Length: 260
Image (cartoon, rainbow, N blue to C red; front, side, top):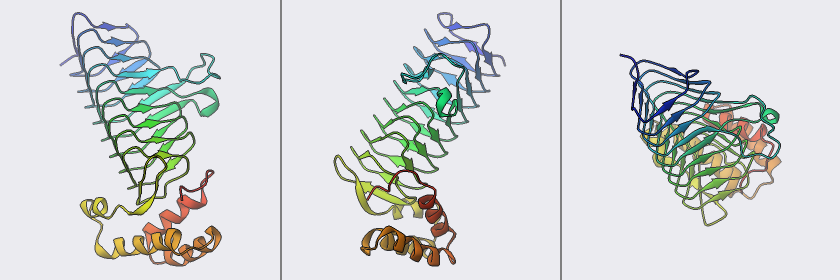
């Protein structure tokens, strides 16, 4: 079946809509927008381009997708937003396109949930299977890896990275990188509170993997070691653990300090 477009919606002739796409009442779909098969755009949404949205996404009412980056340096250059498949994007979510100076693209992966009032700013890279709770705010150039959960009213400073399987507590405002597997809590400045062991169990991590991650966490955050010495010990632990190896690689490739 072709797309189903409400009579009050406005779809630019330059937009490309896949099979079974539905566009709700009073929504606007601009030029250079591509929407994949089975995606539903609710009422009162705006999708402006250049934006590519994959298949089977559900974008609920009043979301603003693909807007210009909120950056003073933006001068109208051609920049993009790319969204994957099977995402849920709830009420009043805003996701901006990239900037010319920041790589020109904002990316959101697949199977994510962006709850009400979430903001994903220009040049952010979001992985897969993430949950951003209500009012989560990402500044520009933030990277969020797979399986991250952020609680309500949390935020990340520009250029921060949040590692895979991390958990960010309610109201936490990040100004540094969060290593994989780590839980951050405390208002407003988040501090490490252990590893996200419950989340890891739900995703099939066995006891041996979780034990290795806990040992790495203690080395990094609880042993009182200078970072250089902690990294040396993590390097030794990484020889027998792929998860510790991933954590160490995350630390070594960072440009911002760790959230400690």
